[in-house]
Image (tube, rainbow, N blue to C red; front, side, top):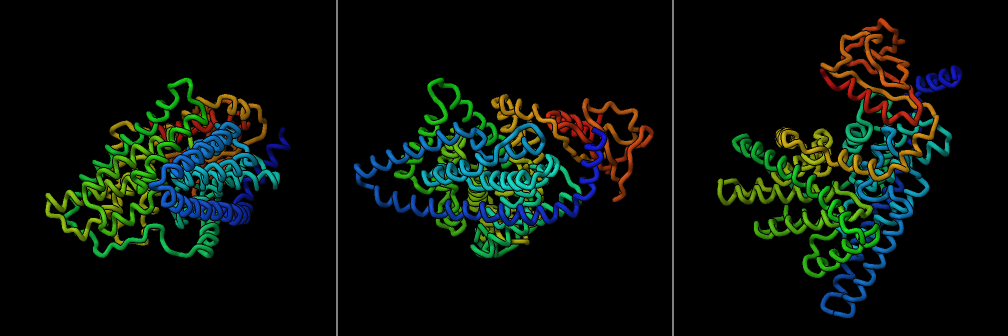
Length: 522
């Protein structure tokens, strides 16, 4: 036991150097896999558009297309039954495994998520590529870790690197990929993880950019910086986004509940409902199918009037709930950005008609609303601000982005709306008890880092005075870049980074207890 503990600690001390090279490897492999996924989804959208043009107006062809949709729903349903961890976004699953609460099998998740996500977008479901891309990247990190026979501590880091690479390759947003992986997945910062995640993110983005190009995902121009005389509208917009974000979180969870109520519905029949809805909308309102990228183009080019934007928002919102609630392998990240953009468009167009807003600023509000809506739903404001600045190629809106995002964050928090990915993770944990039992059977050692926040219960307390979690060993303390050996009379300070060791089976429990100690004040 003593020899095993000593070896684990020594390996942790070499992490900064080891993880840079491993982050480079994960970024390269994960970036290629996500790039292939991104290309596959691009073709899925092209083929869907051609099929809808071909079948429209011909009853026999329409019937044949609906039969194909039911076949795709059946295949995806079988994939979800074979590997339940591919259901939904994939981000909560990655977060759950990094915190030691879930276990995934990369050999099953990688092919099942790739094929399932492709079929869902080919069928026209209102889902995004970002969640699957993050899960594919994280599973690449897990696979590389296990092929190299790394321990669970390194595996968590490599999964975080893979998640960062996945978002960077999916959206050409390396900084946002890095911030999202740290802010939402890993939920912590240290120099070693920061450098390795940055390496993976930049590597994946380079590979993606070299093959696809450097154009930002959202290509619309912002010709003017919003004058400060309009800043009162930013507060109002942020408040609206906070309320709408809370409603979005409620609606997505409610959709899942509604699907689960009828006993005759299973993995496959739920998906058949979503695919059938996609078939109907493909004939009546094809603009709401898929992730919705073309809606941004139409909105920012001034091709949509206020009434059409409102109608499109309502239909897209409901269809997104139908698609995601079914358990289909696909994300909510991109569709929620589209919905946020339409809220911004509605707000700005209303401002033009009733408050004398200059029409040249409509696109500014579209961009700002995307960041604010993302923040209200996901509760990751830094990622939202950086993501929109990278995806649009505009750096002139940083102050406005911050005002809207902070306001939306505050309102959503006051409404007691839980971040969507945390709510989804809680549901997964409740419905996958067998999976959690698999985690509890492991005896590998896991090292985790926690930073003591200002005002936490640990601040200014001695180590011996703290009731530490059961089965948890405090092995190191970093302060001001120097590593200290914690002793009973060592006084803890805000900003200290604590390194704990526990068995893998207790990692989830210890993680929650340590976060409460480090972040909560009493």
